Image (cartoon, rainbow, N blue to C red; front, side, top):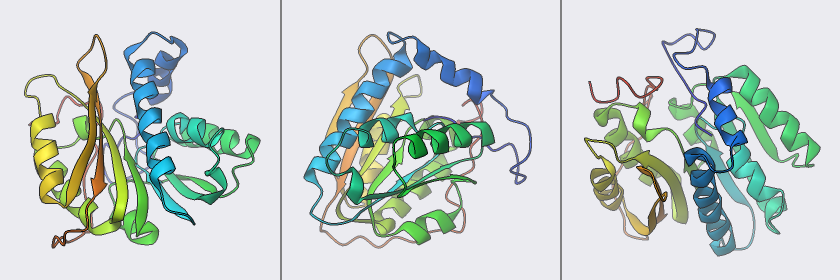
Length: 231
């Protein structure tokens, strides 16, 4: 989770943030990211519990080492139904995710190196039952964020869910994110603050109401550590 980065269009370019080192924060069970992970996994469990019988298509953006999704599938009764694609640009984190998935026997989970901002991932996976966007929204421009949320309405199936995270540092964009998701045809399931921090976790369900939405060739560009997210 939170391992995506794109400095330019070359996926081999150097990272703005050392995301492998960033993941070491999970070693501390009391860290903000560890406490956020608990809320993310709870939302994923609830989403799978509510999913209709049959195959569930899942796409995780900027998935890092995949511990949010894989940690849930390790124990969930619906794991065999979940056909997941975990996308990240960091080759080491993808290697770790793939190794974990293989060790857990989750052979229907694809862990791939790629730019999660490109529409091809969404087109290939639609209709999605679950879209995971954790550690993404604080690292893209407001224009890209709005375009992405509107596009989510076109690729998530009715009844499917989006699980997302966003900090609430000024300027707090979470109220606007929630409005954009509403306009894209989603109903809010939950919005929880991570205790003692400005981190938050949201979950929205795709409603049956029809909303026109296009999927641009590129939904977003990941700006790295968030420093350029509002420029």
